[in-house]
Length: 122
Image 1 (cartoon, rainbow, N blue to C red):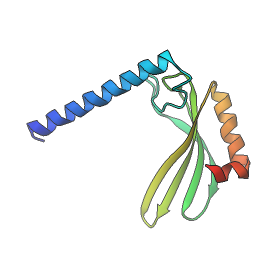
Image 2: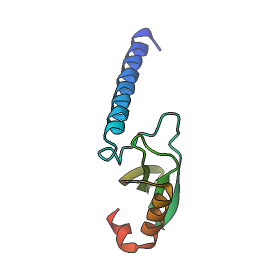
Image 3: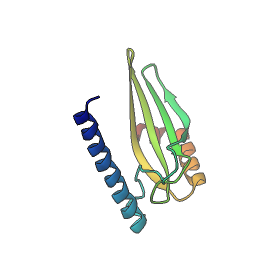
Image 4: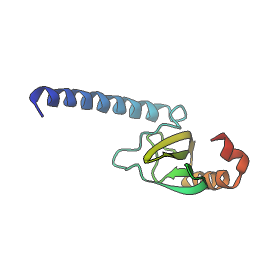
C-alpha cells in the first residue's frame, strides 16, 4: 500500500469516527429519537441471537435481537433475510425496533416468529 492510499484510508476512518461520535452524543441527548439506532455502546460488540423463521429453498428468515444496548440505551430487534441465488448469498436486515429491556426484545421476536401475518410484513 502506498503513502497516498494510506492517507486516504486514515481520512475516511476519521470521518466515520467523527460521525459515530456525533451520533452517540445526539443519542444521549435525545434517546427516543435514536431508539432504532444501529450503533452499539462503546466497548460492546454487535452480538445477536435469533429465532429461525420460515425457510424456503432460496430464502431464510430470522427474527433477531441484540445482546447489548445501542447508544440510546435500547435493545434492538430486526428481521434478517438471507437470499440465495446459486452460490451468491445476500443478507437484508429490515424492521429495526428498539425495546426498553432485553426480555421485551426476545418476546417480540418470539411473537413475530409465531404469527404468520407479521412474517409477511417483514
